[in-house]
Image (cartoon, rainbow, N blue to C red; front, side):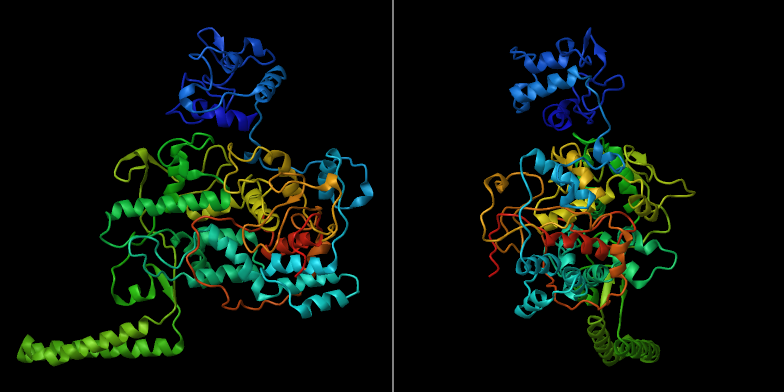
Length: 633
């Protein structure tokens, strides 16, 4: 019911108090404006009694003045099927359950299936149960040539070489597929491939994105993301270091570089708009990125008013805003000259000079200091005009210093001000209209921050995101991993887990968090699938594997078989992760302007490891279904 009410009713009778009509909320049953309340002798919903419910009358009446949704809402009236759904819901008690995505997940019992011998993996029972209910059955196992092709694309984004294909075909010993997975995970190209999806999601770019769109140096952040995948960094550390790496007691260079996540927003040239407006825009961008990347929520919809569909108040947005409001730096570029401009940097940043560069800079610093002293002495002796030749030498030394400094690698980082900058609700989102003052806090409909003393920090927020009781962080990450491998997430709207999300999401949620998949084992390329096993490409059949939006090589409509290998893998599966090389990534990723927004293809619950998660999920490609279009060219 919630998706239907969300679409047709919430714009006028939802969480947004400003636009609420008739003091009626249909997103909740409780309270003086809840769906069960009475007003002027009419009750919006009378549980078990649709004919006595004002809602049912408004949905079914032919009176234009009373009909809902009203004509000027531009919402369609409910059709017969939808009306039947509403009637049955009211007859059954019109129960309001807590929204599934905002409740911490629990492990469901595996359903009964007819063919229990098909798989020992618990996740497969959910999929097989759906298949059997739809009169479908698994397709045959895929051949080895298909498996190595799929796995290579999934883990490195590249096809296997002829030699790699032959070696896999010749490996008849048990565990050949697992060894192939391990080899590809040890390949530096694995990190490069996985980083590509993450960088799209976090709005990575190598230019400022506004006005003259000058170069921005974020290479170190990009390389850190690649290393994180290749080094199997735990996902909770991966999240914490990006949100608050600079706030560790003694941050490492990598943790400081990771905090560059907060510097990936658009940045405008100095003098183009008022600094106060630039600052507000930058902070709003940071909060929006956190909502999209880690929470799977459209927080930005609450910049100007309460969210129309989700229980995100405008105040909630600016309480999160307060965490990122204390940046110790300028909101705009530093101008179009000097070493920092040539390096694509805006303070604060950290530099990584080579020993030769450090020595050259130290020498030039001493020469500059000595030259300034000589100029001052000459002015005292003979006046300012007599120092002209010395001034020319000073300019030459400055140019030489700038030329050397411009070649020194550096990374833009986050830095906190000592004094806490106050934060306010911005009326209608306008930077120059501060309203109610707010303190740092999290949305009220999610678990609270853990108790602490003093002013809460970004570190508190980061640890809240990866807390075991958090209902969204793991779901959002695993769903995007699923989307990467199967073309469509189990929750199709991977950027939005709110009330306007895909209406099949709740049924699928258990599969994401409590199982895993070794999809694609059961496919027979080139052979026709039974008619009952076919599915339209646009459909949402159980376990369907959709066409990919990128690097697609004939990826057509398929089916998948799901197994329990990548999300909650048993400890015996982790043993093979221990002895794996930690080669640093090659510089094979192009630095180019990426689309702002995209899909995280990351991995799940706090403490679970990036590579370990990918290893288990990408064994997914061992199993597949019909039909496919890639015929292993």
